[in-house]
Length: 331
Image (cartoon, rainbow, N blue to C red; front, side, top):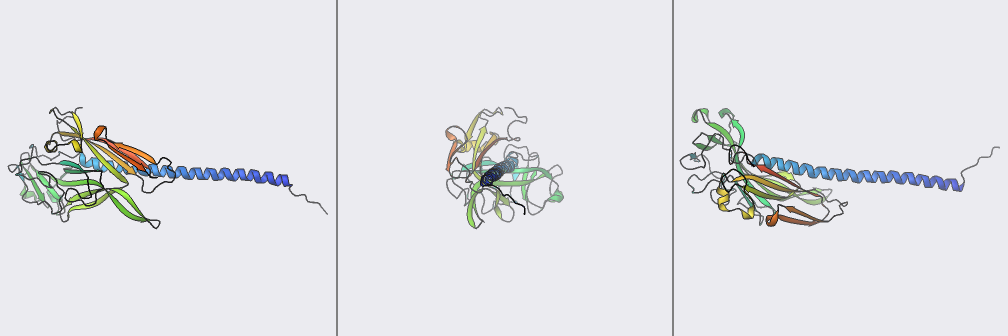
């Protein structure tokens, strides 16, 4: 009969100790990778939100001041026909000559760009869900692609441009109804602002900030649409040419802008955009809860403070208006 010897108590304890160390190392590595992956996904979410939101607004802002082959300095009853269009009943408008379409008989220039700071949920006569303490931007422009008459339809508004005459019209536009040297462009009126959206996630009701847009349509007037979830605040600073030399002389936030600043079609040369992005869900791993972000500079800057577990990132860009001021850009 053979005698079988087992592990001694010391050997068992050493084996358990080493096994515990290995298991602990594996668990630590797993938890670290999980936290790192979660952090990376949150940062990627913020980067994607901020980048896409800025790109969408930038495309519109860059088109301000572009009126195709219409080369007059302003719209008037002598050079503009608006009889084929009407401002919608739910139009976004504030101030003089700032509706969807120009008032050809007005004594002030048509405002192709305008902005206000939301002081309540209601703004510009068309918005009823704006977040307070955030800016609202209104832009009117032509898309950069010239349209042929046979490509027009009744779902869009168009601007028919000649050198000294312009026509706003709903499509379709027949080729025989316009001059041979006229060009056709799709007309847009957009208003960007911050609101809140509510949705269910894991059986919980979650409120998230979102960048929304009011868009001029033919059949529904100004239609509301969500552009990007996770955008929490907007702030705009305008670069102005006050000496008519096509160079930025001063920067003004909305509170410093005057009526004459908005009405000067050639005065606003740049728009600086500050955008604060926020993750959709809180993160318990965020240790710094006293967060402070400054949108803008000086006394006109907006200081925002938060005491929560949401990750945030501040994005900023300066957009030049290529079709305002001199033909050649100078800084």
